[in-house]
Image (cartoon, rainbow, N blue to C red):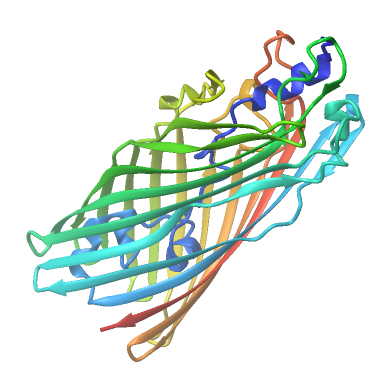
Length: 415
């Protein structure tokens, strides 16, 4: 069977395709208010999304219902001069609805949230990247991810200054992938004809974890928060299929993907009644995602994907100005380093070092609060060289770039 070097160098990396938790795919700021403050919310945690950021913050909240929707719009480019490729992602909207309920009884608060901590993807025009398959195709290139967390929580105000909170995390993950298969197939076993089939898969899975939060109000002006979220293994099960072949070629598969451990600390400082300043440091244990393996049952094969990601710490800043009881405005910034090294980067699962600016507002009407926020993620170019061993590649050479626009609209009703 004839071997094509470019197919080997550029497609073997996609034999396994679930990079579920890369920073370019996860939703970095949960909640309209938190998004407007750059996600620097662990020390403040003063709305229903405290269930995610720091459950201890729920203990002092009024009973409330919070609903919001977030639309994430990625704009990616991929340029590979050696193959004459200058491609852009298809402009897609990844919309997520979210719901939080908090009920307070004296020093005790009960909470429940249904929200989307991850939901993104990438889609490319197959004709623009047809050189990757030496003119075979065009093929569909697409990844689409959604993770829903069903999260009950409880918080207790131990003293006037100190609170503690715990939330259970029940993750339901969905993942779709379309790409060319990683090998040419000899259908007649005699050397001809050869074809490169379209590969498609769908999978879902469940995982369970816990979030623990602490909050201490050192004074009327300063509060401190800390949050620990356990690593959570999500067991994905689905079906992979090779399309457009004379015979049906399907196989069920299982794949374990671990949501990394997350540790965060934050400060909220109120220099005056109308001004709030926040600062967070948020650490993700990406290194735990070393290798991921898919086991195909009917095909009796395993496919291993090496990540070799690095642990990363995001630094976040936020500010809020509320001069009266009618409205508030917010701004934020955070620095988001890429966990994926060049050796394992490909364009279906982008990962870049990002500088992110945010802004938002609230309008208060009796028991109702209307909120809006906007986030723009500016990713740095990543000029990726081919892997040193072209017979065992792990990356996709070329210049990768990703910007993301996200906006959120929310409503809070105080019971």
